[in-house]
Image (cartoon, rainbow, N blue to C red; front, side, top):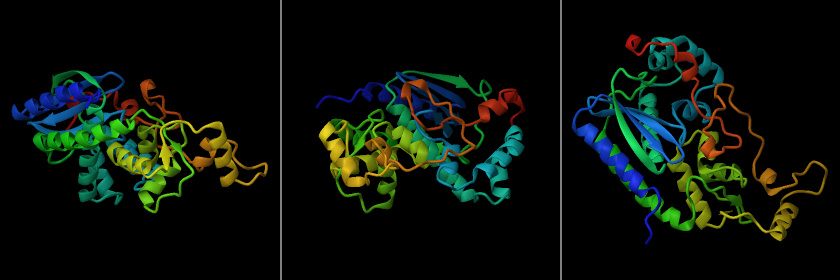
Length: 300
């Protein structure tokens, strides 16, 4: 079996991360891949954050899933982030419980490491603490590096099977004429499939992790509800005729038919990395705009 293209890079990333954990490193591991990069922040050998444009971060997980409204996030962020008190403010304002924040920060970090492992990594450079801004909402306490490495290896073994089917983070699946899934989570994923969006795009739209979305897409693919190649002209015509009435307001393409109207959250910026070519997904957190003037030494 041919090894997936991400294998060498993932070995570089995970072995380097493991060594930093073993030595009790504090600082940032800066990761660069063929199409996207990111950072993994450690404190005394524990992972306290991970961030990449390849997977939704905490802000997207909160806003797109509806856990926190855009208005509440914007107000809390502007008030607390410059002081390094965003985590406490979210709890004090009753927007999230302390346990929920812990779960979400861990989920975001593990998913970010997984996304970076798929990025065909070519360099990993550790930078000591104090050289970059600390994470806005760190995992507290941090996560054991060995645990993250083991979970990432497990996910990569699963993904290798998906790659054999042609499913990778950059493919843009299409909806078929098969019956929709009964499972609610997969139905939500299917509703965002339109031939233009990647797994990453759908993950940002739904506020779900990249691995979770790819898992649902793999099931949809195996069940025949999505395809990885555009439908033929005849199939496209049949799909449109079967799904929509022939009035003036009906969609004219399967891409329009497959996706309901979506409203972007006002609290998310629209600055995704060009390599992913997202068509309609906002990405990075606004903290870079707000905190670029903040001295890292001022952090608590």
